[in-house]
Image (cartoon, one colour):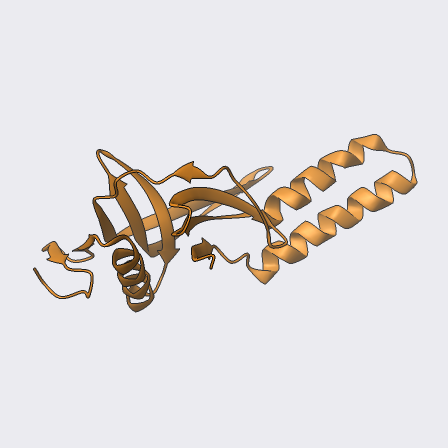
Length: 165
């Protein structure tokens, strides 16, 4: 049995539309033997690429992944001794710049990190706290570790069943 906990951030439809349009520009450029249109292909595929993480419970390995059309790329690494899962609230800012105009988009996210020693890797990002806590519980039960709920001002340690310690 292959028990893999996997998360891949969804690509918005708008990004798929822009990426597809750029790939289409590449194809038209290729028909006219304009090899500089390769830039459109690179940009289009880059826009449609997403990121995530996977945790293989049977092989005791993990990896951060880049995904394009559901095909995941990333190197598996052996699991270290995980200490705890942290769930916290943060803001993520994206800046979009086009020639002379720029815009910043800021959104509040709930981030789930898995800590080991003084290091961590980000496993999951969502806007929904309930969803994040369900994922944290799943990981905590699978790895038999505790959860740190840092979404409020007061941090609370929770056991693997999300009960306060």
